[in-house]
Length: 346
Figure 1 (cartoon, rainbow, N blue to C red):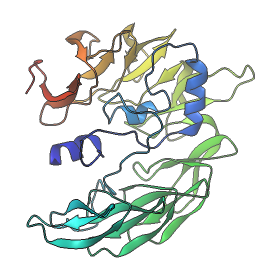
Figure 2 (tube, helix red, strand yellow; figure 1 turned 45 degrees about the vertical axis):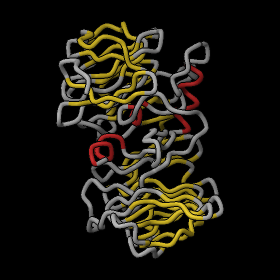
Figure 3 (cartoon, rainbow, N blue to C red; figure 1 turned 90 degrees about the horizontal axis):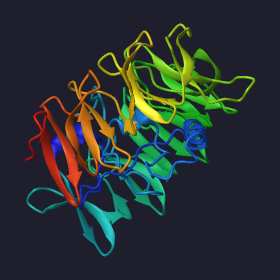
Figure 4 (cartoon, helix red, strand yellow; figure 1 turned 90 degrees about the vertical axis):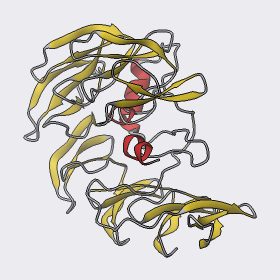
């Protein structure tokens, strides 16, 4: 399971079915407008920055079965192995010897990560430690993973951040928040997006229609314009538009390249905005380990190299990034496989 945890972030605990992550509501609306004529369902409500981390076929209207908070730099010691068990329609935790460690008292329990786990009681989310004590009481609409020491929470349809000890660090007052990345988090109010730091200080003015997390020094951004046209470009941390807004949709930069949508099709650009691969794919995602998932019009996935050449043919019903071990988790029909870069399945 450790490979799955590292690669995807969360799974349904019984079936290893991956569910969708946090949704960017501003980019969701933009993307739906841009693709409202599309006849192929690609889970359009999921922003590309998140699609790059998950299997690309998900169920509609499902909240993520989050495996508990995840830290890039864990500040909590790793707990003993705890497994979810069910009793009388409630869920709890037991150890490897089936000894009950935390009583079955939750409506839903999630996998422990870095000493914390999400739980649900009466349709409200909370966070517990390995002793079963609440770090955050079950009073939130949703709770997202611990990243860079901060836990993204949703309450009364607004967002804020809590620390790993449960203290609210950034007030729950934003219409939209994204996870922290290198000390920056995108934030939005009144349908305008900018960036804040961990002290809730505004780093970049709230002025964009939509924006992404910074990756390799750049973040996608969709400015407002007089024509009310949705076009994405890329900004740097000095708020300079490095690549002009010209794309229908985009993904993050990874390994020096980013996927972009032009005239309904996807290709790749470099950090100067030069098209490295012409838009020939029905859908495309970011690079990892020199490979990027790409999709054909019939919904099948394959992989392209950094020249944009299809090197693993379309054959998968879902796909994910290649990990550091050189494998990707893919699905054909109802079976899951490890895919090697040479195209072999295990």
